[in-house]
Structures are given as C-alpha cells and as structure tokens.
Image (cartoon, rainbow over all chains, first blue to last red; front, side):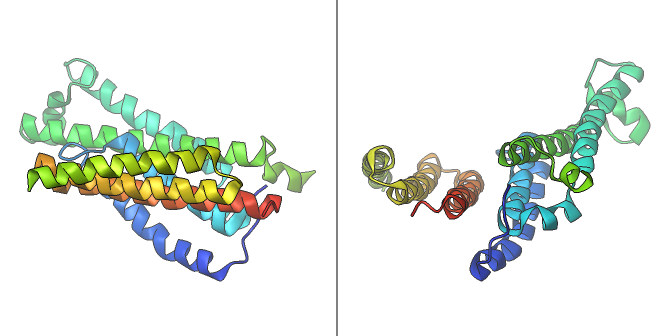
Length: 153
Length: 88
C-alpha cells in the first residue's frame, strides 16, 4: 500500500501542479479535433494527475476525491455517453455515430452538429479512460486488496 | 538553418543511446533513474526540434508538455518505490 510521503517539497509541488495538469487535460480533450490528442490522451493525463495525488498524499486523501465507487460510476458513465450519442444518431435516422443527425435535436447546422457530437464522444471516452487507468494503477499498487474492505473487517 | 536543427536532432538521438546504456546496464537503481530522466528530457527537445523542422511547432509543444509531465510522475513513482523498499 502506498504510504503518505513526509517530504514537504514533493507535497507542495504536487498540490501546485495537479490543477494545472487537469486544466491541460481538459484542453487536450476539447481540442482533440484540431491538434494532437483527444479523448484517450486527455483521459490519460487526467489519470496522471490522480496518480500523482495518490503517490504524494496517500489513499486517505485521495479517496475524498475519487473513491472506488466513483471509479466504477465514471467507467460506466463514459461508456454510456459514448454509446448514448451513437444510439441517438441511430434513432434520429442515420448510421451509428453519424453526428450530422444531431442537428435535428440541437437546431444547428449539420457541420456544427458534427463538431459538437465528436466533442461529446470525446468527453465520454476521456471519463472512461481516466477511471480505468486510475483503477489499473490503484489495483497494481494495492496488490488487489481493497483498503476500504480492510476497515470493515 | 533547417540543416542545423536536423543535425542537432541526430546528435541528440545519439546521446539518447548513451543514456539508454546507462539505463539498462547502470550499476544501481539511482543511475537508472537518472538515465531514464535524461532520456525523457532529450526526447522532449527532439520533439520540439521536429516541430521546428516540420514548421508546426504549436502542435509539438502540446506533445512535449505531456511528455515532460509524465516523465516527472514516472521519476516520482520510482523514487517512491525506493523510499518504501529502502534500497539506497
């Protein structure tokens, strides 16, 4: 299990750096269709900020922000957003993930609907990737034992 | 000027190989951490030089920032492992 470090420098640097990492991850997700990046890369950067929090502040501090219930919820919600947008396009009469059909709902031009649709899909992918990446790191670092279960036994 | 950046990139690629040797064969864990960190920093500079060569620096700046960030977290993770194991 990862213990809390008692080094002031590392804790302070992490506390300063984590918000900037998360803002940068949001930038990567939002600009996925103009520049390198997208849902997966932004999700990995978001997960990196959580990994940094877990490394420096330990599980006790991290679970106030992102506990195991939230990991499961975020995994599911991301896939739901992705599949939901795809199915919505199917219901509106197009192919699966044919974003231009969303223009009927949003009352915008088909080109704008494509841009908005890919943004929604990337947000979904980002959420899922963040939760799964953090979950993989967390499971490896604890060796599969859940610290929340240890408290109950 | 184009050739200068290309030459710098090739020299840096050669230096990465030297750091890789230190990372694989280096005696002790600390030498390996230092070697891997140096590889990360050099890769960042190579990426920016590639951006200058291709004339699209604004795209490569994004990638190199992510690389710098993950390099920092990776070094921190290995240091954390050393702190727990007490191997120094």
